[in-house]
Image 1 (spheres, rainbow, N blue to C red):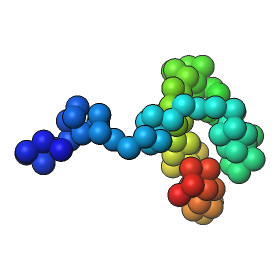
Image 2 (image 1 turned 30 degrees about the vertical axis):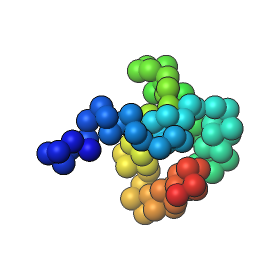
Image 3 (image 1 turned 90 degrees about the vertical axis):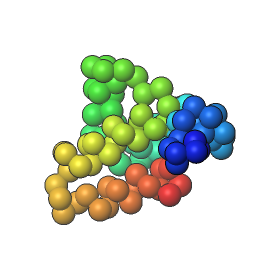
Image 4 (image 1 turned 90 degrees about the horizontal axis):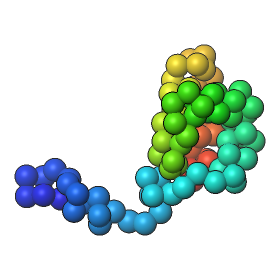
Length: 91
């Protein structure tokens, strides 16, 4: 952290290994998404990756999942989906 209390490049360089930003998206996480969140979520992720850019790390993938839950899932079902998404990432 910089003296003014904000993170900078040095703070990012010292981030612990294994964060979502540093972890690549592999087949196993895609299988877990399909298993825990369903084929519709997996299909949405694939569509987003075709249109925009392939998720290069798990943070980008998590952002796509979060957007889907917030905007595509009925409000009464969101909590369940959020819990399942958390399980994928061990939260």
